[in-house]
Length: 204
Ligand SMILES: NC(=O)c1ccc[n+]([C@@H]2O[C@H](COP(=O)([O-])OP(=O)(O)OC[C@H]3O[C@@H](n4cnc5c(N)ncnc54)[C@H](OP(=O)(O)O)[C@@H]3O)[C@@H](O)[C@H]2O)c1
Image 1 (cartoon, rainbow, N blue to C red):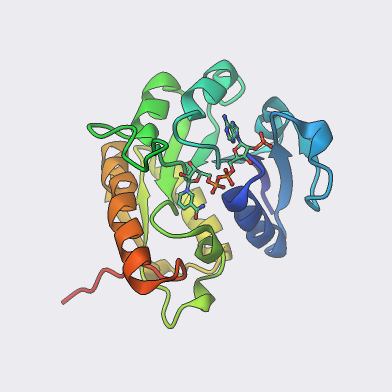
Image 2 (cartoon, rainbow, N blue to C red):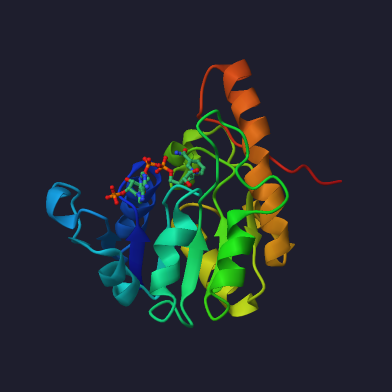
């Protein structure tokens, strides 16, 4: 079983924590206000506490804030796997990193951290519950470190994403495509009237 630190205590953080805990992993949330986050069902500490706990650390903070939150933790995150789910969106739901991605920027700012971008192309209510869908569809992975991606792939399997649903896109530069899918995601959600769906890559 893996120790998992989770940055943030919002929708994504709670969904991934619940799924990972159900698979037997040990969760510690990292919050800006740990003393006022009491009823989450798992220990809540500072971001530094969560980083210290996690063999894998999940970034579930707003993509517009993640760099400022993570930079001071660079030494603590040295060598750790950072499973990054963040997307940077402005208040008017435009891309905050139109020619880049927060995944790339975190990797650049924290070169010793092993960043893997995944799960950001679907809603929080699907991230650890693909069984809610008629079929799971595709979950994407982006990152430079093959060992880190293998660890994240194992965790994804525990969250319900069988190996054949996982698609490794390559290096961290491919995180840009995942994050920018947010625009299409919002369009599809509007058209369907629900967030409970996923994209599915169909092969020949
Ligand atoms: N919701 C989705 O379905 C979904 C889908 C794909 C990607 N994402 C991405 O996943 C990340 C988390 O999304 P979410 O829906 O879980 O967001 P959320 O419910 O707003 O939670 C974000 C959490 O980040 C922490 N945080 C740290 N700095 C913050 C700040 N300056 N302002 C607000 N919160 C701050 C907060 O925890 P504390 O207050 O305890 O510190 C907060 O609970 C975002 O980057 C989002 O774009 C979300």
